[in-house]
Image (cartoon, rainbow, N blue to C red):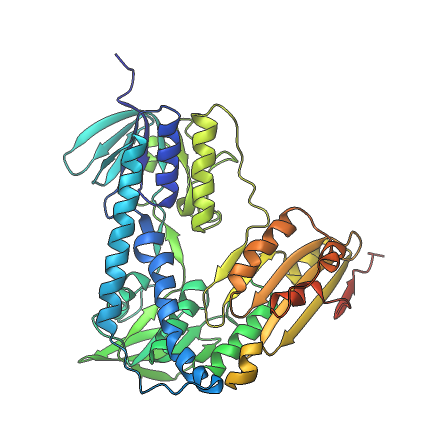
Length: 462
């Protein structure tokens, strides 16, 4: 008789948990995965995928406007929000079914229940109060929207979760936040015709990104009619029938028919039984503390993805889940390299970035060369739209290695995915220069910028 009911019990059916379950099952492990909501997790069900669908749809209005410059006469277009929601729901249901099928085909078993940890080798299913023993437990519960401090009227505020299911397109919406989710939804709602105001506590949006990217994105968003107010926060929200009044810390107020907070996400660690099992929390970020192989303070319990609050990106969770299965069940140690992770913000305009920002590079390297170009994209020369693209390379002035690439403009994410390979391989600026340009493209600028726009030399301490 087996010592444990299963070899691996996974808590959380998101992208990371599903990958770990499938790979472990492929190695012959007996795997059970518990999901209390819907298979696919945040990214598939109410995150990256539906958001990208919304972004694509919101571009259509600009495409119609731009068409006139290319000779098209298009009759007055109409938009129906409920149709968008229904079609999005249909696609998400298809993806959820695919995730479920793929897990089951791998040989892993799915249980639809919340699971909590009883001890180092035991979980309890709340659906039927059944206990299951496991040689290993993997926590992949992800994160959840964080509204921050409790303020008067916080109950009227929605998060990105609810934004995907609104019955009607808001005519006016106030969004608090300056990161990925806030700016992406600002562009989405503005694209569909909403009057959008963004509130952010810092001096500029996209904290942590390259300063040129931050300034460029803000300028372009404001050109598109989005109001961005920085250096203030929401103090309270008042409801008047179907409308709201949002009061700000600077003394002003804004009327709208929807208020959304997107100020960050916190690891979903509550009520999992972590303390009971002795699983330590990282005091710096509130996520589960893990080592380089995703092992927690308890040898039999691991954690991956957003619940660790290391790098909250779906592909990172997937890579961590795969590495965990390889290490524990494939009997070969695989440590995830978290350096030079490419990322995108599907704002409008789009951001794609990989590697160090200029500020980060200057803090580490003695000599840093900057290559930067802003230019009007070829489409705008005919459409007449007032927009510009930003391309920027951050280079180690001593070794010539390209340390970072930052792009703002159409297809920025697609371009950076390819550039990330070069950055990961430690390509030099000379390697970029030796690559023949592909014309006419925006990306050719990356291999034709020959003269630094700035050169920074760190002074030696006296």
